[in-house]
Amino acid sequence: MKILVANLGSTSFKYSLYNGDESSLSLVARGGYERVTDYGATIRDALSSMQAEGHIDSVDSIDAVGFKTVLGFEKTGCVAADESVVADLRASAELAPAHNPAYANGIEQFAKEMPKAQLVALYETAFYQWASAASRRYAVPKAWYEAGVRRNGFHGASHKFVAERSAELLGREDVADRVRNLYVGGHESFEGQPLRVVSCHLGGSSSVTGIKNGVAIDTSMGLSPQSGLPQNNRVGDLDSMAVTYVMKKLGLSIEEVERQLTKESGLLGLSGKSNDVRDIWEAVEAGDKDAELALDSLVYGIRQYVGSYMFQLGGLDALVFTAGIGENDTGVRERVCQGLEDLGLKLDLEKNANTRGEETCISAEDSRIKVYVIPANEELVIARETSRFLSHNK
Ligand code: ADP
View 1: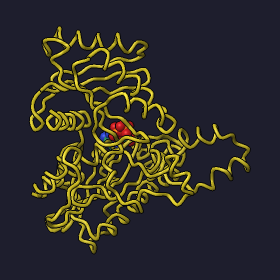
View 2: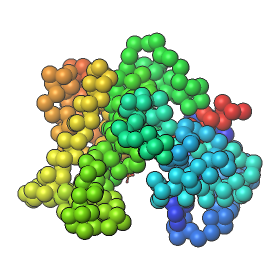
View 3: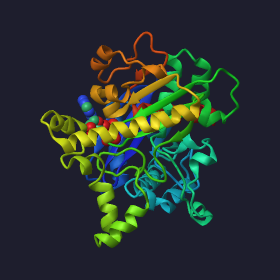
């Protein structure tokens, strides 16, 4: 089976071609284009190079194209990327302006260029569809909810991968199997021994998700990726009153408030230096107090969500770190796990300090709660979900 994963920006297009079955997919080609003006021509060019390099015999030898769509009002899950998906992406574009129009246009172009391939949309919100109404509803008037104001949650592909992989590492094949079938077999009831995991996806954009028996119960991001932890340059959690207050107090327009909350806040806003934790650590080492505060706020936010989900889950079996910061930042991991021995969590400091980017168990031998670093390969995750969709919808 050949699966193409298409990563679409407003003027960029990256692709990865995978070959094999769901459990044995291997990357055979990858490429990308910047400053794209004509998507159709770019897709044709990518297909020609894959053919010239001998990866495909013809356009028709690609069975499916997988797209990581962000969100829609009507749609979620892992579904056929048809006209209704395109329409829904357009209707909800205001909540994901950088992504939805690019995917709506891109999917239309792929449908034209590759009429025989199955197009599959994997929504970033898909993993949260079974979370309780209490976790998904904001306490706003019903008309707001009906207009689409709800907790959607994001980074679903990454947190779902963590749910599956952590279950495998803990020897819980029953739960891993449930996760594998989640988008294709439905959400059946689970009778096994409970498995409680908290997944920390910490990168340029960060979120924490509580997972029970392989299914998300709650997540730190909300209606948009603006909420939850302080992000690289986006605000994270904020009292809604702050918006109207600064508009009046500082005379800011709604566009200006939006710009500052999405471009000048988060770690950048707090540190006043950088949106990258590597620069922030450097400044901390040089004694910079604002940088220290930025780091403290990030760690505080992570612990706040981990603690909350641990309580909601009634305990914890594994804590997982993934994405750029989660996989590489030994200092952030150490701070997050500090002083939790009484709760049954003890880090192996040496293992933690030596783990960057590899899948490793970094908790101490006698730690009841296991702590893992699980690197996520986003393209492979999309290819796997696409392949599961194909097997199920033959
Ligand atoms: P994105 O959300 O942009 O896809 P990534 O998951 O690639 O983010 O993470 C990017 C962030 O990860 C960077 O902003 C940086 O702060 C952090 N990061 C990447 N590599 C390292 C590293 N070696 N050490 C510490 N932090 C890192």
